[in-house]
Length: 98
Image (tube, rainbow, N blue to C red):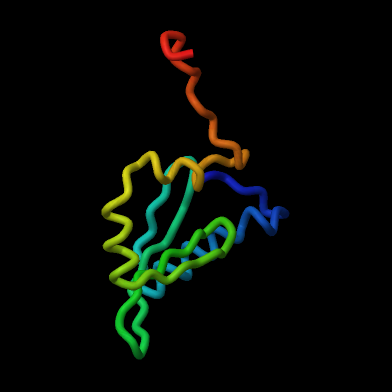
């Protein structure tokens, strides 16, 4: 984990959320760009995969049909979701096709 200044309340939030997620039996995945917790959430209509962004606290619950749909996507389909500028950089046009 990265060092966070003690007087930085926003910086401490992901660390606390990570501890809480682990205490609730969730699995935490993280790298230098993101930190998410994954867990199973039971509902009256069946189980859901719970994904929590530990930096912002945003969460989503995906049912089995939504998860199946994710398996059909190519990695390129995720590019608009991952671009922090909200503008996906497109490649240069092929000079032979201009």
